[in-house]
Amino acid sequence: MITLLDENFSQLNQFMTEKSFSKVFILVDENTHEYCLPVLLGNLETDIAFEILEIEAGEEMKNIQTANQLWEILTEMRADRKALVINLGGGVITDMGGFVASTYKRGIQFINIPTTLLSMCDASIGGKTGIDLMHYKNMVGTFSFPEQIYVYPGFLNTLPAKELKSGFAEMLKHGLIADKKHWEDLIQLQHLDPVGVEPFIRKSMEIKQEVVNADFHEKNVRKTLNFGHTIGHAIESLCLESENLILHGEAVALGMICEAHLSYLEGLINKEDCEIITENIARYFSYIDITGFKEDKIFDLLLNDKKNTDAKINFSLLSGIGSCVFDHQCSTENIQKSINFYKNIS
Ligand code: NAD
Ligand code: ZN
Image (cartoon, rainbow, N blue to C red; front, side, top):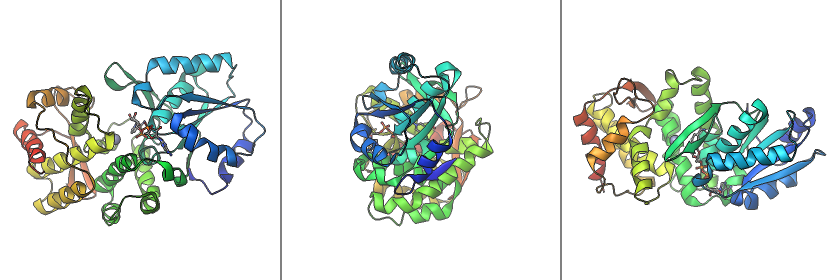
C-alpha cells in the first residue's frame, strides 16, 4: 500500500505502533544518511531499538558483496523474523534493501521510504527487488512486496537537479503509455523543481501501481512500462562501457524519442503526435551524442534484451498519446531509422 506521509509522519508512527517489531534496521546511503535520515528520525515516535545500516551511494554498490555484508550485519545483530528493515533512499536502496530483507531468514518484513523522484514514482513500487551481476543489471532478485510504501515529497528538496530530471522521464513515460492528461499536465511545467512536480507524483504512482496490479508477473500489460527502455537500456549500457556515465532517466528519454519515432514508422501513431513527443522530451533533456556507437553493437544489445522471445526484439510502442502496445516486433530497417532519427535531431 502506498501512503503520502503528512508533515509529522503520523501514518508511519501508527504503523510502527500497531505492529510489534523486535528491532528496526534503517538502510541508508551516505547521502540519504545526511539529508533524509534526520527528517525521518525527527518524526519517528517509537520505543523500539533501531540500528542504522549505511552503504556507499551509487549503482556500483548494488551487488552481491554489499548484500552479503548486510546479511552478515543482520546476523551479528541478531535480527530475527520479527525485525523490520526500513529502506530510506533511492532505487539502489529500495532494490538492495528489499532483496536483502526478502532473502534473509527466508524473508523478513521491509518498508520503502523512497527519497528520489525515480524511486517514488517507479522503483519503490511493483515488488521487484534485486542486485546487479557482473555488467548485467538486476540479474538476481526476488518478487517481494514491501509491507508499506511511505512517500514524503519533501525529501526532493535536497535531491540534485539531474536526479530530479531522471525521475521526471519515468513520469512522462507514465503519461505516454497510460494517461494523456497526465502527459499534458507534465509538459506544462516550464522548469523542473520539487514544487512543480509534486502535484503530479501521486498520479504517476497510481499509474505504476495499477499496471502492476493488473499483471504482477509481467505477462502482458506490465510490459508497457518498458516503453523507451529497449533502445534506452542499450544506449545506457554502451555509455557505461565507454565510461560516459548517463543517468537512467536520460537514457529513457532518448529511448522514448527513438521508440515514439519507431511507433510512427510502424504506423501506430501519426506524425503530429510523434513530433509533439519529440519536441517536448527534447525540451527537458539535452541531446546525448551517440554518433560514435556502432550500429552492430546497439543491435547486439537489443537482441540480448530480457524481454525478447524466439530471438526477436520485442518492443512496447505507443498506439497514441496515452496508449501502448507490447510484444511488437519491428523491421530492422525501421529500428535503424529510429536510431538515426535521434542522431540527427541535435
Ligand atoms: P539512487 O538510489 O542511486 O539515487 C540517486 C542519487 O541520489 C544517489 O547518489 C543518492 O545517494 C542520492 N539521493 C537519494 N535521495 C536523495 C535526497 N533526498 N537528497 C539528496 N540526495 C539523494 O538512484 P535512483 O535513480 O533513485 O534509482 C536507480 C535504481 O533504481 C537503479 O538501480 C535501477 O535499477 C532501480 N530501479 C528499480 C526498479 C524496480 O522496479 N525495482 C524500477 C526502476 C529503477
Ligand atoms: Zn526505467
